[in-house]
Structure formats: C-alpha cells, structure tokens
Image (cartoon, rainbow, N blue to C red; front, side):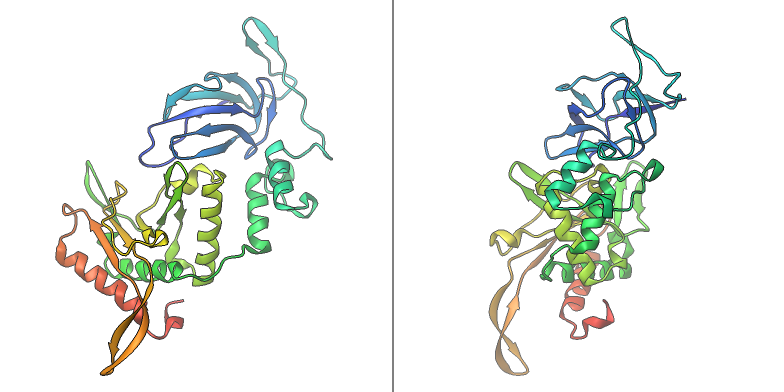
Length: 323
C-alpha cells in the first residue's frame, strides 16, 4: 500500500509552493511525523512531516521546483524494508535500513531544534512510531517548560472577541459558493508581520483558553512564524482574524478581510488619554478598534452590536468572570 504526498495548502490564499529540500532520500526509511521535506511559499517556509511510516519510493518533484497546491510530490510504500525496491533512472535503489536506537535515532530536524532550544532529548517523551521523538514533541516540551510570555492587552482582546462571537455566532462565518457557513469552532487568526510579508497563525478553540494560556500560545506562534518553524496546520482553519497594527504605532486602520472569513478586527495603539469618569477627569489607557466585515453576510447593525459587545467585555471590571 502506498501513501501519496501532495503539496499542502499552507494558508487559504496560498496557491503554490516550492520544494526547498528533501530530508529523506529515495529508498530511505521514514517514520510517521518525521520531517520529510522543506516547502516554501511566498509567506512561509516549513518542514512537512510524513503522514505514514514506510519507504520513500518515489520523488516526483525535485528541489527548486514550484508547483500548485495538491500536486503529487512523492510516494511512501508501507512495504517491509526487505521487500521494497525502487527504480530511479533504470537503477535499482534498495531501501536504507532503519536507524538504530541510540545517538542517531532522532531525525536531523529534531536534533537541530533540540540543540537550538537547549533541550535534552532523553527528557522528551516521544509520540511517534515506536516512541520516536518528533519535532512536535520537542515543541510541546518547550511549551511545557515555560514559554516566557508577558500578559499584554492582546489576550484580553482575543478573550473579549470570543465572548462576543458566542453572543453573535454569525460573525464566525465563511462565505462560499454554497452561501453562508457558520463555523461551530472559534479559531482566531493572529496577523503576524514578517520581514517579507504577513502570516496568520491560528489559535485553535480560543474560546476555551484562559488569558495566560492565550498569551503563551500567541507568543509561541508569533516567534515560530518569524523563524519560519510553523507546521502547515497552524496557518489553516482560522474563522476570525485579529490584526494588531497598533504594534507599529498606528491608531486606526481599515484592515482587509482574510477570505473566506467575513470579518477582521483591527487593534490600534494603546495610549494614555484623558477621559471623563464620574464627573471627573482621569487618565486611562485607551485604544481604537476597527471592524471590516462582509456586507453579504452581516449588516452594519450586527457589526455595531458585535463591536459593542467586544467593548463591553474589555471594559468590565471583573475579568475573573470570563477567564
């Protein structure tokens, strides 16, 4: 039985990708979740894990080639190593023997990540085939060890947005050929600026997470987005996007909707301003929020209600009620 490897969809707006490097040669043994190849798009470069354990029998797209999403890249055979062979240019290529347990047991990508992060792989519990440590295992270990994340205002905005979406589920929709599709799960995309563009990693089930967890996850996703170490699924499936343009000092903007989503929230710079409170003048941190939305799905009244709810949740005094 063979498993086809195709160019993955690395984002809703990504139509093609480039094979940068094959990490396993033809005839090489590979295990499920082990890094198979490096793929690059105009916005991100990622290592693609193998979906199955077996032998890499064919490479159909060479390094440096750019192909559309969905293009067949390679095949992995589940045939036992002793039986699997492959012909490349008329030459029979026999599979490489499995890497034995010990010093060379971990893939190069796993060893490189562990070295960069100062992780002792003997302390990491592997979830791959045969207990092998995967790249995801190392990333989870780093997160558990403690991702240093300051509690900025962005997690509060995310939490307020998820509460407002619960009140008005239609905002958590997509527009497609079949019309309006209201999404059950709330996956918040966080627009992240890169040196060469923009990437939108996704915080999944954001409505189920507290402020500290949101802060750590946003910090982790942003860091790995900038270092181009995100997994493909981490930039897919968002249902609503937040863009923090205030990080560059701007007060107000009209962000572009990240289709097929139907709305995006812009967050301006937080600055201390004078406000009237209880007939007196006070200084408070203030900021502007802006919402771009698809009029085919919601009208101005619904958008105003949504923004009013976001504002209300942000301003309420007892945050423990929504943590």
